[in-house]
Length: 131
Image 1 (cartoon, rainbow, N blue to C red):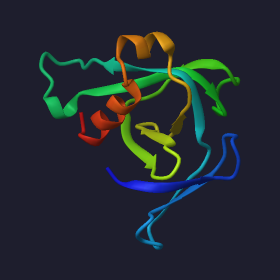
Image 2: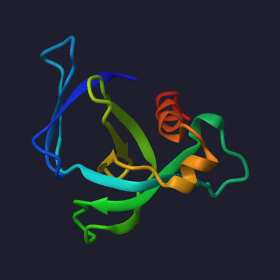
Image 3: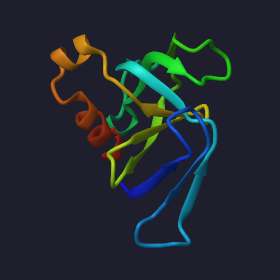
Image 4: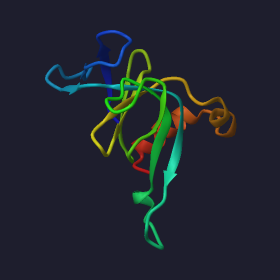
């Protein structure tokens, strides 16, 4: 997993520019970040009898702010998660999903965290490992 600097304009959903700390030419621009609060991860079943371990997928669900198709505070479920960008300075996390949208993780669902302690870091590790 690559650690980069995420520089948001403010705390609202907006465009951010992520820049590698080591390489000034390595910029990643992400538009329209959706903030996801009260989030949890959901397993995505497949339509086949067997699934190779490297193809396990999951989605995020939570209350969205800044989603182009839903009112702020609506509960949404993402398409399958495919990438993670982690800020090296203030520990922000942006998750990329198959639809091309990006979600910034806000507060975690309390029941989910009780069931799966340290769920945020476990999620990041699972994505980085390609699970």
